Amino acid sequence: MNAIHASFRTARTQQLADAMQAARNYTLSLFECFAAAGMDVPMRVPQMRIVNPPLWELGHTAWFAEWFVLREAISSHPADALYMSLLRKGDDWFDSNMVPHRSRWSLDLPSTGGVKTYCHEVLDRVLDKLSREPNTDEALYPYRLALAHEDMHGEAFLYTLQTLGLQAPAHLTHDERASGAPGDIAFPGGTLQLGSAPETGGFIFDNEKFAHPCYVAPFRMDATLVTNAQYADFVEDGGYERREFWSNSGADWLLRQERSAPRYWRRDNGQWRTMRFGRLTTLAAHEPVRHVSLYEAQAYCAWANRRLPTEMEWEYAALHGHPAFRWGQLWEWTASPFEPYPGFVADRYREYSAPWFSTHQVLRGASFATPSRLGSAKFRNFYLPERDDIFNGFRTCAFE
Image (cartoon, rainbow, N blue to C red; front, top):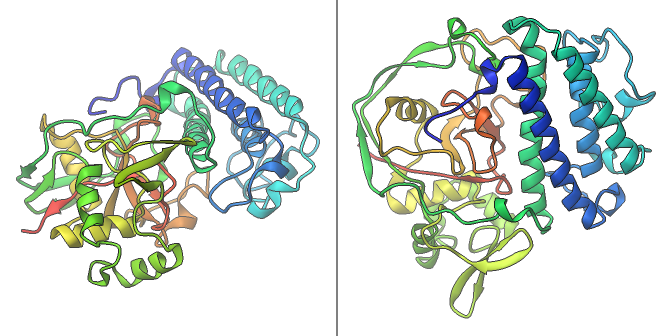
């Protein structure tokens, strides 16, 4: 995903309308995968900190669009919507700021059909309102926000299918070889304008605000992501048993997991296999290793005498234009904790970034499950270091 086409950030009214309809169709198609397994009923969904009941998540995506577009909320504060929800208890059910995660399995939600009807009604009204909006960044901001939010939840739906061992649409389950030829790329370094500049126009996430100069020293980075074959060498060399490769936090995490290989790897007659959407398949040697935690990525780096790139280095490389540098197959762990840029101020969606500073780690790039319209070399993803359920991998840098 070196080139991003039709970014949602600058999408105009008709592009937004088409994208919002496509995003909803995709969300509903994945929801049907849960429904086919009976997991449209929340009580049948395992209670895990890393997933939501799909019915709640489906309703939440529609509620979010209703909140910012139809109800014209000036922020995510519960008192900041100008109008009432279409649902009598919409805020009580679907406001993620007000509904504790553990309670989402026991809410008196509408039926599956009722939530779908709500989704259709919200989208119809959103598209009707959008058709009358001027093509200005201010007018289109809530629509772009709602689209990005649904795209993120669409990706979450797909990795939740993986987490729960459910089948996904066939075109989303294929393996991909590591993109490009392996080897290091030498980057000269220099001054990088880290973040997004206001004069570029369009939508900017609050954690990208605003561009500021950062000096990046010369560095050498992998052209491609670490592959299953490379990671298997680490595993076979006792990487999960050798304490010297693991940070203190990583060792504590590993002790709790009781594992000796990545989350979904299985040893079968001397061959590595992997669980992929509920099916055991042969591990493709040249596919990028996926579903690894930050701790596992760090341990591999220690074993290989390499390091993770900082997010400044990653952004520099992505913007440099080197033809061998490819990204977009998997989200990529970086060495950088998720921190605000200088002068940070939360945007209308106040909880998007601010609650997660210092506890989460930055990932850059995109994954095969990320809509191309969402991809940007400036985008900062962020997760807790132990997360290995998302579509993530990593590349390494040389020590200079």
